[in-house]
Length: 249
Ligand SMILES: NC(=O)c1ccc[n+]([C@@H]2O[C@H](COP(=O)([O-])OP(=O)(O)OC[C@H]3O[C@@H](n4cnc5c(N)ncnc54)[C@H](O)[C@@H]3O)[C@@H](O)[C@H]2O)c1
Image (cartoon, rainbow, N blue to C red; front, side, top):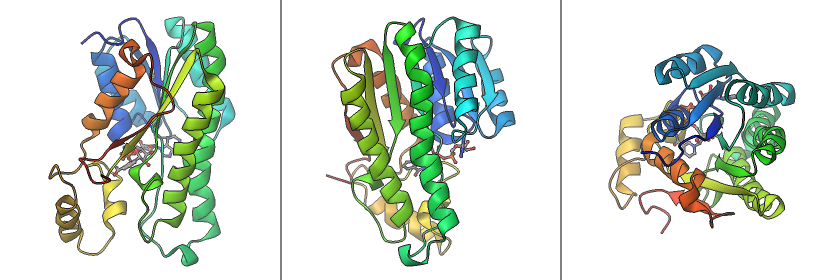
């Protein structure tokens, strides 16, 4: 696939799960990729797997300077930046919203919402130096349709879904911003969504609520990220795309 031939991308949260699959799919589509993550070793391992057209950096998305350094690395190593893919995110186990701690509430919003804003803010000048670009942000279907126990997480994802729409309006016409809204996806984060009690039963019950009869796989979201980041999606911006096997229909 050459949908992203000669493009240069930054993938945040690229050490694991959806971010890792996105880095792999971007590279397979012809892009050079800077893989970033709080887990610097994990990011380096993914970049090594991708070969000479990949680099890595240890980046905490809540750190504005580290986000700017990743952009500088992309321009220094590959000469430009065309794509930003924001995957880094966090949640804890389901907690009644009245019982959530201030620390957990703050942490969820700092990573899931402020972290996206800082990443976009760092990338936009470089995207413009390249003549424009595409940003995809991983929100969640929970940003549109919530569940008990996820007051902080679901509202952070509602915020990020809406942040994507607002940025789409503000950054047009040269930068497109779209949001991917996955259902429960088979990654390291899945146990948090299933909860600590009877995870096997919770998994089966969850699958039973998805018309297409399975959980999301990281590649399902990565493939959508490739499309939305490519010139084939040149007239799409401000879209929040459910990738949920029909659960939210
Ligand atoms: N797995 C799901 O069911 C699901 C569903 C909907 C949305 N999402 C969203 O998808 C995104 C990716 O999650 P995943 O499922 O691949 O989980 P994951 O745990 O496999 O990957 C998350 C990655 O984000 C990184 N990360 C966490 N905090 C960070 C920070 N402050 N700075 C930089 N990196 C940080 C982690 O180190 C990890 O590599 C998240 O935004 C998550 O909220 C996941």
